[in-house]
Amino acid sequence: MTALLSRVISANRVEYNDSVSICLVAMDQTELEASKEAMRQIAEHREELRSTRKSCSHKMEELRAQGEELQTRNGRKLIESESNFTS
Image (tube, rainbow, N blue to C red; front, side, top):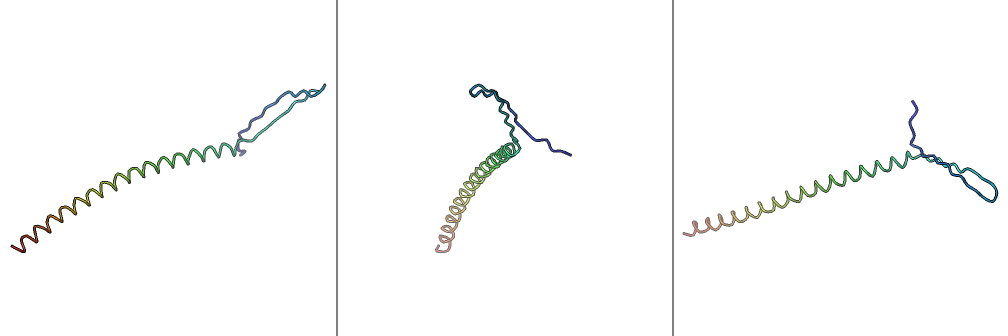
């Protein structure tokens, strides 16, 4: 099975002095298209990472707030316990 190649072919008339020539240019764009696909995938992964980072940041903030709340509660309980012990 033969792979289809992406090609660009162009022809231009070139006049130089009294002669006329045709300039043919052929270019295989397989690597260019592969690079475009790789860049698209990188951009997609970058967006996924941004989203994950944002989600983790929100979760970390929630956990920090919960930790502060626990410290506050434990501090109150310690004060109550000390108060009961010294009474």
